[in-house]
Image (cartoon, rainbow, N blue to C red):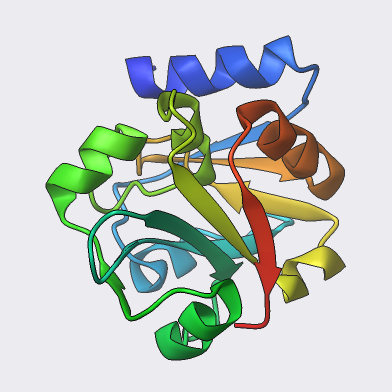
Length: 163
């Protein structure tokens, strides 16, 4: 088990959040991951780490894996200008992860609560959600209400949008 995964597991356990764990080869994209999802009963998510045009605000956009994010529509709903993908350096600085391992569990590394979380409203229909534990060779599933509990424990601003 990697240190990244261990940190996530410790946080979940400290919050009393149960999870199921699934190992698989490294996957960097939804397309790579889909072939390993059979038997995992959860809504799978796509996680995008973005920045605004000035580079002074960062967003973690979480949406259903099958959706294509309309970044202009997201920007309009959150009241910011043009959004674009943040650099791998910004990703490491703010969430402590590398490209391909972006996950809301990276928020445990955002001690300043600088990253704003943007949730696809359609995630509310899920009973279980799946995410990498900050490493792309494992998937964890947790109950949707436990995901809310996790987000609340992180202290980041969370906003729901239509993606």
